[in-house]
Length: 179
Picture 1: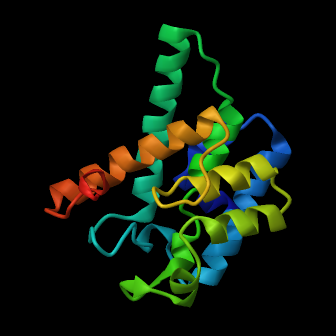
Picture 2: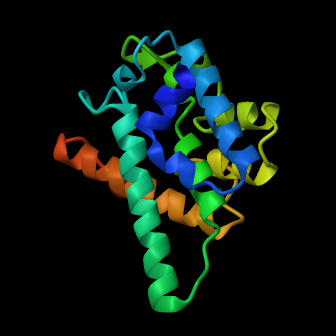
């Protein structure tokens, strides 16, 4: 049941050609969903600073922005992007937010670990490639490690285009303006 719901929410998961990677992404989502306490995944918030935005919609937006960037890079510059790596990393980049926030504030996990770490940690525990875990870990602006793959740059910029647009729209200072 949860597997089907995750595929319904994120149909692009079926675009991941590597079956093991596709199944691993689904298993990580199921794990976090079960740990989260959310009955309906669409109720999980993106960020308490931007109320009313669901985590699912943020991830969908980042995915579509990322795929548009990848398509433009290939079309206009001949740069090939690993779509499996990109889709998997985008779908999992904020999966840990389901347990990093509780009742509108940071949970113990959210307080103790830098955002991105817990999702990367569990991705490895579920047997996903270290490259995917690396991209999850390096996507935040405050990551101590820089992305080692082009897909990481795409994810980083797509994530912040979406997050900063949402923050700006709500009158919250965008990350871009933070010094």
